[in-house]
Image (cartoon, rainbow, N blue to C red; front, top):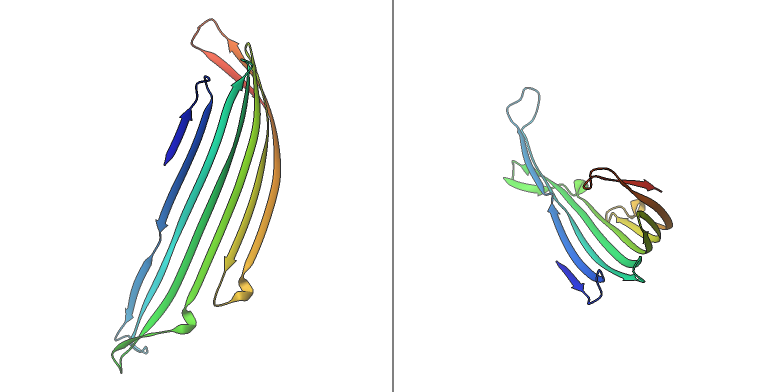
Length: 184
């Protein structure tokens, strides 16, 4: 879902968006061993309910000023949720029922949050372009194993990322052909 607001001032924009992504990854299997020499009859079912969900929120604002200058700012927030629930059942021939094997049951929940923001300044003068910016990124990761809490973990990362770019638009004999040179 996207929203864009165009203002009266040329090239002044406000944009906002939201994206949801769902990726189920369930699996199921059944195996049998019957009438094998020196082996007992065996049946099992394996089931894994798993999936990934992602929410992305983004907002950005761009405004030109004094004809050759542009200021831009924005934020983005991503939430990733992954999970997996695994179980195993064995067939009991005496009772003619499927019996859960609790020692094989496992559960896993994983959350990955990313928050970024940026601020940039652009200057266009004739065939030259100058851009400087600063980006902040904050990332948090958490994993939980309800069956074995000793395996749980959390991580946190924070970064400031500066950037600078100089461009030159090279004019050739052919008016439609142009070359942009980027220096970072």
